[in-house]
Image (cartoon, rainbow, N blue to C red; front, side):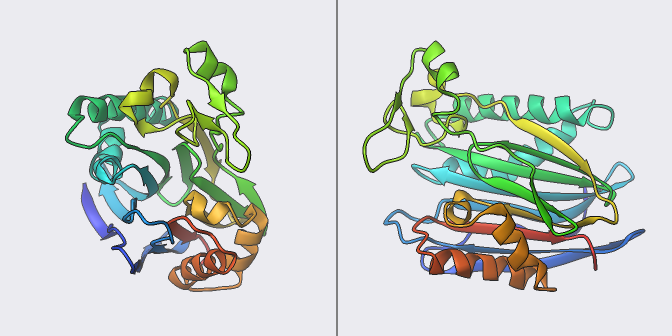
Amino acid sequence: MDKLCCFSSQASEGHSTHGTGKKRGGRGTIKFGFHLVKGKASHPMEDYHVAKFVRHQGHVLGLFAIYDGHLGDGVPAYLQKHLFNNILKEKEFWTDPNRSISRAYERTDQAILTHNPELGKGGSTAVTAILIDGQSLWVANVGDSRAVLSRRGQAIQMSIDHEPNTERGSIENKGGFVSNMPGDVARVNGQLAVSRAFGDKNLKNHLRSDPDVKDAIVDEDADLLILASDGLWKVMSNQEAVDIALKIKNPQKAAKQLSVEALRRDSKDDISCIVVQFKG
C-alpha cells in the first residue's frame, strides 16, 4: 500500500494524542482528525487507533479504526498493525467487501489466540471504517466502540453495540452465563462487559468475534463520520455527538471537543475519537 498520509499512535499515560489529515479528490477535500486521552482508571492507556489515507490497487482508501483494549494493550496494538492489512489481502475485497471483512476479522482473531500468551490474556473491541474512493463506506465492529454517520445533520448509528444481555442466548448456548450484579453492568461469566471481542482466550468459548458489517454511500447528504470508544458513548448520545461535531470546521478540534465534553460529563474510561468530515 502506498500511503498518502498517516497518523497512527497511542496516547501515553496522563497525556493525549491528537492529529489531523486530509485527502483532495473528485468530491472535494475529505479531512479527518483524532484525539485520544487516558481516562481516570488506574490501569495504563489501552486504546489504539488508525487514521490514514492509502493508495491500494489503483484506489484511494481511507482507513479509520478505534481499538479499545482490556487487561493490557497487547491485542489492540496487534490489531493496529495487522487488521486492515488482513482485510485488504482478501482476494474478494473489491467484489465482496462484507464477506472479506468478516473473514479477515475471524482470521485475525485466530492469529491473536495463536500468539497467546505473548499478547497477554486480555482482548479488545474494534470499530473499523473503510472509505473507498471517497464514495463507498464500509463499517464493521465487535464490542461496544461505535461508528455514527451524520446525514443532513441526523445521526445514523453504523455499528451495533454487542452487550451481554442482548446476546445472552448465544452466550448461554455455548455454556456461559451473564451476570447482572446490582450497581454493575451485565458481564459475560461475571468478567467481560461485551459479548464479542478479539482475544480473551479464557472466555473465547463463550464469546464471538464475528463482526457486524454495514455499508453506506457517501453522497452530498453525508456530513461526517464519528468513530469513538465507549468512554464517549457512555455519557453522550449519537445525536449529541453529531451536533457538537457539526459546529466545528476543524475535525481534530471536533474530536478534541467531543473528548472534552465526555470528560466534563464525568466519563471515567479512556476516550478515543476520530472525526471524518466529508464536506471540505
